[in-house]
Image 1 (cartoon, rainbow, N blue to C red):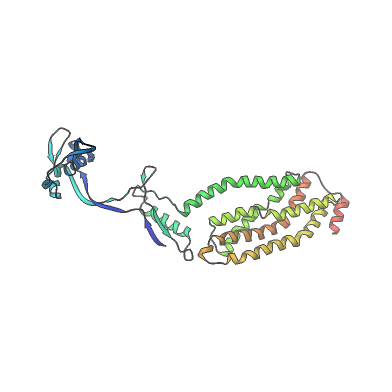
Image 2: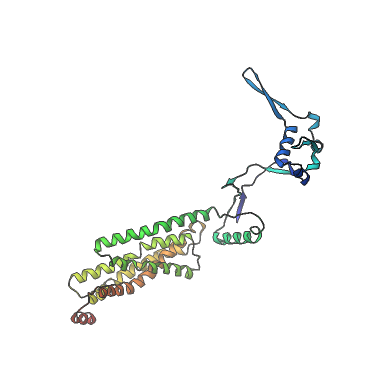
Length: 338
């Protein structure tokens, strides 16, 4: 981690006043005392005089020789709510400190922003985030009224994840509609889309194989994968439907379409996987966000394709049996001959 900075900037030196218990007993508070000290040293406006076009303020304050040092503050008399005057040091104490050059607030609470850059070739942002949060909870959160909020990249990722999860169901509905309209079926799109979860499983398994963490960009790859893995299933289902329209039995059409489409489906997925290999093995800060996406897409496509060649034909036959569209004995015998 390098280039660490924060939003705290020390301002000018100031006198910080603390009220003693004796002062509180006399009915004084910090605002009362601070106001009287300010009026004594800086002055209080008593009136304004109009002189031509100028508006002149008349200030009342102690003589200059009585407001030159902190010793003059010690000799100051403070008026109590009852009208009596008491020495400053009998009701308050003071110390020197630095003021804030600015005070930032969010939702009524003071905020200090800490920033830093990370060398992604050495450590992952999630590791730094977890370590900072862990140390914060152990040291500060238990004793101080301090709240830690993860911002920067983490905040943007959480916001993006929220938007992605809210729009993902809509994307699935659009995919379903695009499949249902040309297929003229409400159930066959479900068969085609059944491989989407297996694509996600393959993406997660791919991260395990590559020794990579599942990060925000990995999820982006999984979401993009949802629109890719349905291609092989769609090709297989369309081939089965076409063979059945030509008069072929259900089991024979399923087995024939599987044999016909096995090579193009598998080779397409394999070439996609090989094409993404250079991205997966790239170790550069400039491409850190591409690697997890490439892992999700490559392993997800490959795993979903293998599942497609077994799952889709099985689901197709089960669905047709459920609807009562079973083959005759002759059609089954012909299918088994192939």
